[in-house]
Length: 187
Image (cartoon, rainbow, N blue to C red; front, side, top):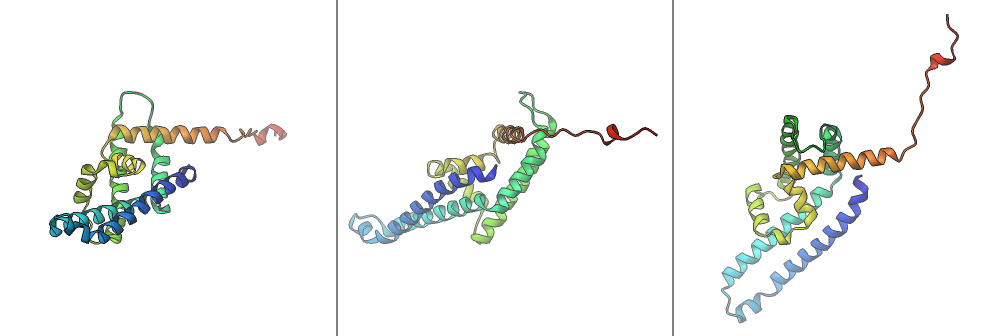
């Protein structure tokens, strides 16, 4: 399941990352233009520093969600728990327990990796930046992050995973198992 979506995610993330590099280059090369336009260099510099930090963190996030470790953790979690979920409008109590466990595991993995890649990382600051710059975040990445805060989206993810897995399983031929006792003489 992971490999079919991985290449499309990678190409979108690559495009975003190349845009980030262009932004960094523009921020560094336009200092003369800023003074000619009469913009306070301190304000412009702080703004471009925030842009670079945002782009860097988003780039790290994109890399993290593409890592085998993240994909394996998410696939394992979804596989272990998707059977509990049903297409009913009524939600079972177990859904909340599973959702809380998902948040703890996935968010913990992302936080640890971001701290490794960006030592001054602060989750609250990142979430604030993402909320204020939603349109600059890749939609698939945003959906992944939103699944931490949106139970309905999480439930849809579980049901989609279950459906996709069931469809893939139905593509395999059915095995017929016969009892060994059928051919053995009775004692």
